[in-house]
Amino acid sequence: MLRITETTTNEAQTLLQLEGRLVGQWVALLRESGESLEANAFALELTGVSFVDHAGLELLHSWQTRGIKLLNCPLFLQEMLRQAALAKTNFATPPMSVAS
Image (cartoon, rainbow, N blue to C red; front, top):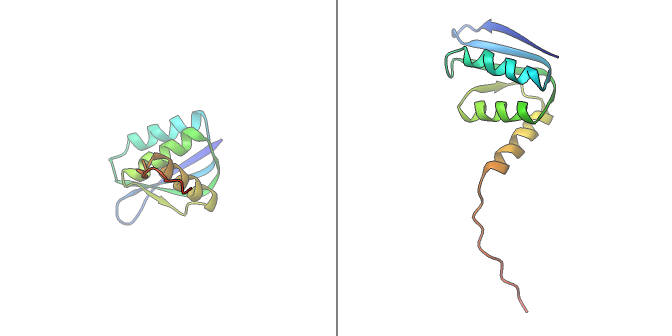
């Protein structure tokens, strides 16, 4: 289950506070909530997130890439997002030479 609480900050920005597990149908619910808001006019408060599945990670990573702020991101989720960013980066490495 995921609880999404919408509040407005002093800067007139919408804050979506998430609590629980970002999985399955809750990913779609969060996507709908975000899409109903003006682009870059909202941020996510992630302190209460306890688990994220692949679809949830993809959504958070895509929003982070678009410049949406992910606030108070738990350490496990920071690492997952870092790994997702690395996986999407194409590294051009020269062929290794083997010394004989």
